[in-house]
Image (tube, rainbow, N blue to C red; front, top):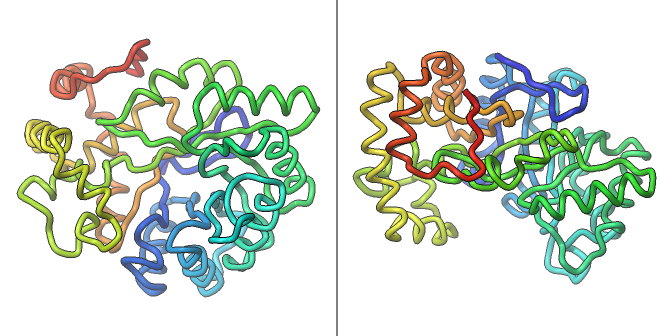
Length: 330
């Protein structure tokens, strides 16, 4: 396993990590979650991602039970959660001081942990002043409940505003962002955030590197039973797949698959390796509902050296979506 520093901090996270979105408390129960986490740890993974919104808190409960059962050394692990959607009450959502603190304490209780390594603001909150959120995060860090905080799906301008408020008030600024990034979704990570990597040392923990499974190639012939797009409550994903844009993605995946075959890897491994090649990606969050998927995903590290300039040029020709300003991370 390769380990990368998270932004300009001294914290190292595994280049590949494992997340609980969709799977824990949804597709899989505690036993399968344990098997997947155990396989990931044996492969060198140290970062596990969660959120209060995943399965309405059940994903945190499942992961917490697994952590308690397994007895892995806590200091060897980097555990995250995300705060924003915590319930139906008027103060159970958003990034007010009340919800940030109460929501985090509730997450800690569900996960049976004394502290969270990384706490993310799951989305920007247009109703709450950024200074209020920054102060709440700083309080949690001062209390030893959180070690680092960051954002998820925030604009570069909002991240910079939070960073500037923290510096002005002598508070701890956001360290990392959790953005959507894959072969088909590139503008924010490669374009919008480009200045933040150098200016503030922003780290990134990217999600959906396989574009909800489309980049595995398993949807090229339709939607398989028991796949993510077949799950109840994920109509929005299915609609995206069935849209014109989704159909164009499927065509491109079909064009990319021969490259994967030439490299001796699966389409999923090619897509993950492509993400890993970007030096501004601190960790690639993978998902898995079975140990075989964990093992397949971990093997993508072996594909990175095979992504030569020639191979990357062929991939870019198919994707035809490189953002401006261009960032060549070869």
